[in-house]
Picture 1 (cartoon, helix red, strand yellow):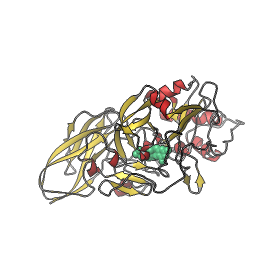
Picture 2 (spheres, protein in one colour):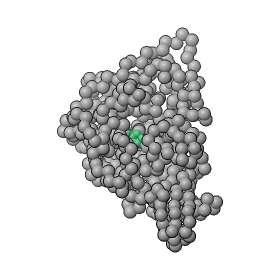
Picture 3 (cartoon, rainbow, N blue to C red):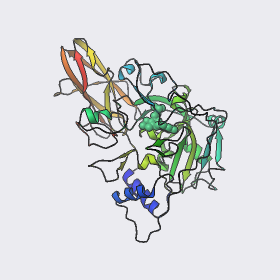
Picture 4 (tube, rainbow, N blue to C red):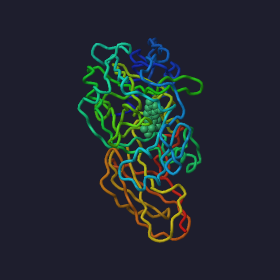
Length: 425
Ligand SMILES: Nc1nc2c(c(=O)[nH]1)N[C@H]1C(S)=C(S)[C@@H](COP(=O)(O)O)O[C@H]1N2
Ligand SMILES: [Mo]
């Protein structure tokens, strides 16, 4: 799927009055379209974006409560940034391929809602379904109905698009706005649920559907004093039908509240924001959809990108050591361990450099997955001194992590090689 083409086509459709963009100002879309080279035909009737999405009151959501994250966040496992918590890489040292829930990172735009699965409904509506059900009279599934459908299980990573953001400042000297994650805004779990394609077909998917937009039941996101509505981002129907899961289990247990109970979306290989938690509604549309999460956020803005940014969907290639940040190790034989992953699929090769000049292959541990990460280890005879350890991976498409990446204002997709500070004593 060519995302740039998808982005251009949908903008052209919006300009022709064939797309919906609730909650997006006309000005923002005009700016976006100018940079993507989508011309406005003289005299073209431009649709006026309706006012902010009128989401029906979310059933089963309790009043907003503190704290933003419900599970314990001990300092040995997490670094907390407001409503978000980053996994410490040393906390993965003794885990296998899956990240236990007690140490899985959390990214909340607002807070974890408390939802009762008994009153919960998944509501599907829109012009891409037979009979074009409305938000007021949607096609509904209860939790029990969803769990009774044929299930599927996938092992997949959820990774924030901004994972590694702090290295734009610390390694490249140019800060980016947003949570200053190191490399711990990723987790891999075994997700069980229903394929989105199964639900869409049962709900009466039509051949004309182009986008499916999952909407979260967490409180509306307010940014710069503007209410942007509930967290939501459209998925192209091809991706929605390909490998997307509506998950109700994580690592064999019901989905924990912080990770989207009762049901979340899991979109393998794509940025975390695609994997909407606390799924409440799914708009299936015959017209392209826009939300702040594919116009204002989750686009690459910067000098090397189009004036109004490039859409971000697929993840970059990254590698991390299972070590504390600023680790202290004892001189002598050390077995370093780490993990590498890519939105393009499997990792083909990982190399490690301890001296900043020479690269030697790391040894894979087990067989990685195209939707998760590859574990690896590297034996090092460490002499006392200060080091910047590096790991670089090459994926199935031959993409190797570069020394630097072009800057983007919101700090997404930091895929460059990270220099991990280590002191050997
Ligand atoms: N409803 C809802 N879904 C959401 C979010 C959110 O704030 N609200 N955050 C998104 C982002 S930006 C990321 S990176 C992932 C994080 O998933 P996790 O908290 O389970 O690790 O959830 C995504 N889904
Ligand atoms: Mo994210």
